[in-house]
Each structure stands twice: as structure tokens, then as C-alpha cells.
Length: 511
Image (cartoon, rainbow, N blue to C red; front, side, top):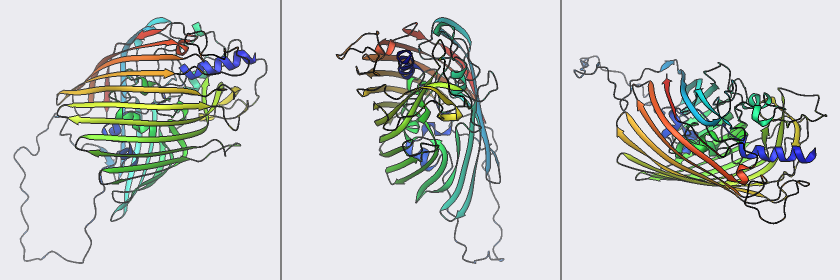
């Protein structure tokens, strides 16, 4: 039984650690530290100092003259109208993303998983699927943000945001999609994906802080990790789940595990100094084992003449990757089930990410690399411990990495602005896993292996994608695209199928 549980937990690393994506909104064109400094806020305007001067009554009032076309309505997406839902510094915003998709190998639609279907090849991808393909381009969410100037150069800010599934009306809940598949044979499972968005009331963001264009921004609460912001800013597909491996598979943005793509109870500070920027983020552990369950990330970067580069270092202790409990269910499970029981693999993750993009004329070129090292946790977790979203570990593996697992992720691509309202996007993604020792008792060959016999063997994932985004109006996009993905050797261990394609069309409405 220990062998079955441990192997299932390791397999969960290659497939379940997905869909920790963030909704693609106003952050999509910002470099990562700008996401920290501005978070979608317009630049703060300095108030003129009040020197007590009064307008002279002898001076006649100047007549306001407007250009002849000042009141004309424009459909040019490059010149958007300011019709935001703002009242006394509070802004209500959001978007809805719905579409149709065909999967050559997929699983049935999930009412709770963030994307509804597995756009990327997964262990349970089996039969063809045609139907609803929600949240494929940008995700559906609603949010409220606010800003209040408190000094000439400082404002208080806050943000609350939650993602939902338009096909069911339920909040995005990766943990819930896993629980629904507990104890089911792999060929009877529906789509599921581990995620940082696990049914919380504000599953994307809930933070507040102070922001200054001079001194930077300091925020506290539930907010995106620096690595997650880098994925949005430096992915040619801007983290679109149906067309991006690193958008759908949240392990890249989470420094190894998708549950860390959004960090609870975290402090973040970022600042721009001319063309140079820097940021740091720290998550303070919570729960009965608060000490080892924490995260620290640091970022430095800059922009010059169309070129933008960033480097991010990350250390995450007590990271968890969740997957369904194995079939058949274990005889002994914790009595404290919280929001539901899951199988978990625990690790201490160390990563570094290097990303760059360059804009010239109508073209933008993107490239990125992340190196992630998984080690057994220094402080193990136990069945009954809580993880993201209030879910509880029913079974747990703390020794899946007798030899450290190394996952390398590469991506590149480009976007071409064919017209002011039409973008064409191309991308290629590759993942490479080493051959590593698994948990004790898994009969792993001490030598190297390059086949699909075990999840611990070296393996690869490759994907190619294309996307056309037509901005019909200021508030609506029409999009169409396709992604081909394939796994081989160790990363294909336990898979029912090895590849899939996902032609997808849809609409995104923003307000």
C-alpha cells in the first residue's frame, strides 16, 4: 500500500500540478515588478502644493475650447475610452471568457476545475471531447480595487478578486476538482487540476498596502508570487490556459508547485529606480507547522530600448502538490477532513528563473528559462494536515525525492501586431526532467532510465501553439487558436495517451 500511495503521489507531480493560472487582465503588458509596483493602478498624480494663492478676480475666465471630434466615439482599441466603473476611488472590474474546444484526447468537463477541461495532455486524457472550453484565453473573474491619496506622493490601495467558472457559476476550485475524483479508476475520472485557486472567497487576490511612484509599493495579504507575475509578463501567450503550457501548468509560476502561484499571508515590496527594478516577497508560515512552511522570492531586472529582462530566485519550504486519493481508497484516513481529503507530495523547492522580451516595430519576441530543484522536506507533514484552501492530506509522501528531482522549463515565441486590433501569437514550450531516485520501496533502478516505466525516469514535454486575438471593440475579444502537446518517457508514465491537440475558439468580454 505504501508503494501504491507513494507512486501515485509522484505521478501527481507531472499532471495534477496545473491550472494555478491568474486571470489575464491589465497586468498582461507589464513587466513583473510593475505588477508589484502598480498592480493595474494608474500612476499616482502629485497634488500641487497649496500655497494659499487665489485666482485674481480681474482675470476673465478662459473659455474651454474642444476639438471638433472631441465627443466622437472611437473603436480604435489603442485609444480606449475611460468608461470604467469607478466611484469615489473604488473600481469594479472583471471579465468573462467562454468558448468551444475540441480535444483529440481529453477528459469530461469539470464544474470546479479552473479551466473546466485539461487543455494540456494529462494522465487521464483518453477520449475525444467537444464542447464548452471556458477560461481558455484569459479566465473569468470579478474584482474590486480602490485607491485613496493620503499624501502628495503616497496612496493607500487594496484589491479583492475572485475567479469563477462561467459554465457552472462555481468559484474556481482546484482542490474540489481533485476530491471529486478520489478513488476513481483513471479511465473514469473527469478533468481535474491542482491550483492555488481552491474555492476561497477571494481566490485570486485579497491584499492592501501603500503605493508611491517614488518609494515603491508595499502590500500584504493574498497576492501573486513574483514568479507568477513573470509568467504573465514574459509568456508570448500571456498565460492563456488553452494555448500555454506555463499558463495552464501552474508549477512554473509557483516555483515548482502550482499551489504557490498565489501566496497567502505574504509581504511584497517592489520599486523602480529609473530603468532598473527590484522586488522581494515573503510568505509567513501558518498553521501548526508554521516555521518550515514559508516562501521567499527576490527579483531584479530592467528595461532599455525595447528590451526587458528579469531574474527571480525562489525558495519554498513545505510545498505541496495534490492529487486524487488512489484506487482503491486506503482503509485508514484522517477523521478531520476539512473541505475534503487529497493525496499530497511534499517537498522543499529551490528555483531560479531568467526571462526576457524585446519589442521592435509590430513584433515582440519572448524567451524564458526556469530551473526547479525538488528535495525531500526538512520538516515532513502528516495525514490530517491542512493545505491550500482548507483541504486536508489524506495520504502524504515526504520521501519522493531520495535524489533531488530537477525540472527545467524552456519557452520562446513571438507576437505580431498585424493590425491595431489584431494580434498573432506563436509559442514553443519544452520541459526536461532528470532521472532521479523516488521514494523508498518503489523498486527504482539505482541507474539512469529513459523510458515510461516509472515517473522517476527522465522525461520530456513539448508543445507548440498559435493564437489569433481580434479585439472587436474596447470590451470584447474574439479569439481562435490551437495547442499541440506531447509527453515522453518518465513524464508520460501512467498516461493513457501521449499527446493531444485542442483547437479552441471563444469570446472574452471585459468591463
